[in-house]
Image 1 (cartoon, one colour):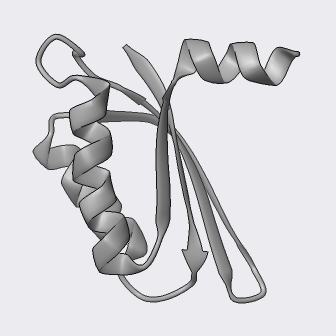
Image 2 (image 1 turned 60 degrees about the horizontal axis):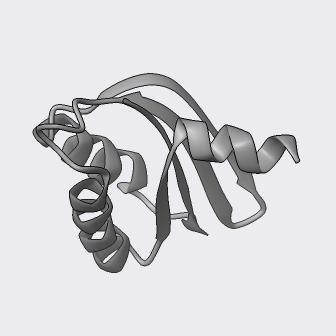
Length: 89
């Protein structure tokens, strides 16, 4: 399945490393990524692909919630289909 992951929070060293390391450990492939800094705020959007029969989206969210807590970030995972439907309205 394809999913959209958003990462937001105060900028600091190690954000990209923490998020992408967790994704690699879960065998989640990053298909596309965009990141930007707005003053002191970091924002990253990733389009990822993974096997939901092996890694349910809720388990991926749980793993990224741990990263979010450790890094003081807000990380959200949505199926690409849901993300697209919501943003087309």
